[in-house]
Length: 73
Image (tube, rainbow, N blue to C red; front, side):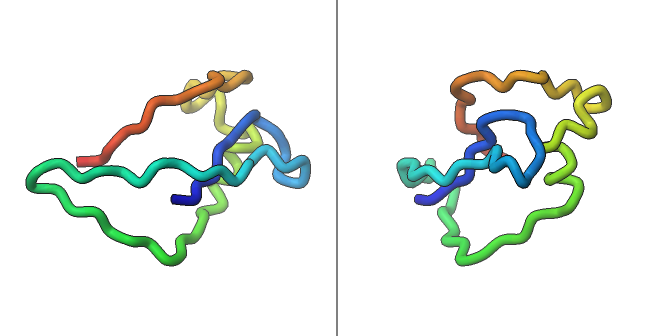
């Protein structure tokens, strides 16, 4: 599956997002896997990538080299 990885806090024009391919998630019992064909990005997400909210949300100035997957339940 395709994903966008934020590799650093930086201005969007400096391309802090990188396209990557990750393994498709495996649904657990009583879960479903939904195919998404398109998505949108809220401007506040772009502001977070650019570091405008780092004090408010506790975003580090340097991102960890690897972040574990998470699920919303």
